[in-house]
Image (cartoon, rainbow over all chains, first blue to last red; front, side, top):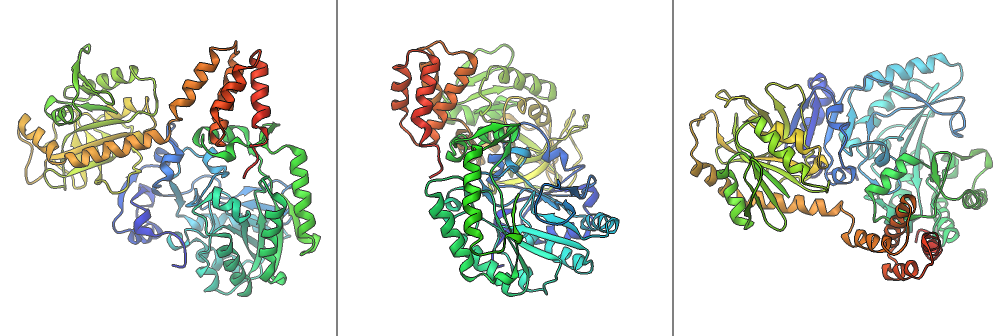
Length: 336
Length: 267
């Protein structure tokens, strides 16, 4: 494993819904963790949903929950989202992430930090197929909203499985978003035209402080270049943009590093995202991270969202746009 | 830390080790030392529920640790094997609890069923006791679930089925695994500390509240200011003198905000 989960060290406990106990994917995953305790449950909500759980404490040693998704498999993305096409959806085979980014909304959204993996990939694919057939134009499916798409590939086999599905459906575009350098699955398979591998970045100085457990920026740039050189389309996600000391120097330094070796021909899109959080998420995160300097930032609360003051946001976005346009065409630059 | 045991025999090693002293309780015997409280519930769900609920109502802090310690049967484990309950069932109730296990490899983790009557039949992989479910149901009202745990020591299994277990044997079983007990206690206490804001912040807040007339909203804003000062690594004494020298609550807050403003940007 180039990078990713050190299974035996990190998963001590696996909860399994009775209903998927005999699912081949469940058996395969359990077999990877011979030392883990396995406990069955009727429904993952018994473990994931109860109140009075502490996300930060669970983050120290998350368990793995293997379950069946029975709700919605794909979710529409608002038209205001820049990247993609006319018909955009996101889907989440897993909830929660092995990384610990201090700005991550998941800790404000979910009561539990356990990794909740839905093993019924085929049901996701059936729904993706349905949505794709509804539209004449290309339909986009984004992964990596509720988890990192690649970081736990050695456990989930998610990318490998979904690549063979999307490869045969050129009308269905897939974007996998990641901060991982676990790119073996990408380098070991043939790229196909309707896939984008999107890497997100913040400058190294910030990443070291607030993206705990995430590979270094240099390591991710190296991984991204390898993936690009192998023939995959690349997405660059500067998200979230964090206002900070030496903002200009840090972000221009990041862009210089990124574009130094990147094969621009492989670059599909670049997007900029600010740091707005729904107020209830922010409140919960403040309680969970009372000593985190990021949570004591100069934020404003507007229309139920907490973010940097709008003037600062505009300035920072403008600065990044100007810099990026020195490297790329504006057609592939998006603000999300 | 709040300990709940069914019997004195299970509690004795804790009482001795932590040098706890008996205090008067309404129905159940209670013991205390500076850091810990222990209540002896008596046998069975109803008593465990009552004792845990009683103790919970004495507590204000939701970041305290709760531990149900005792002996139990098990369908698979050897005698004297300790285990944490990762899943707690009840022979009469549908609700199932899954105490989050965040300490990794302290000891084995097993399912446990709380029975109304002593169990004489054993299923592989299942522990048997008479209090845990009722304990957890109550204790999880008073603390975050990661800090509510059930630790059992195997006293009977299919090869050594349940007979009357003497008090002496119960105490011995706990004593034999006491290193694991104290290790668990220490680690849970450490976790509890991690989620508590430093006491000094609350003390300073209270002190400053006494110096001006703060409305409820402004009192909350003052605490945010103190918390942010601490999170940003700024000098709390400097904030204190700014607030003390202000003419009123509004001015105290705006002075504090102004002073902190430039430090809020991420470094």
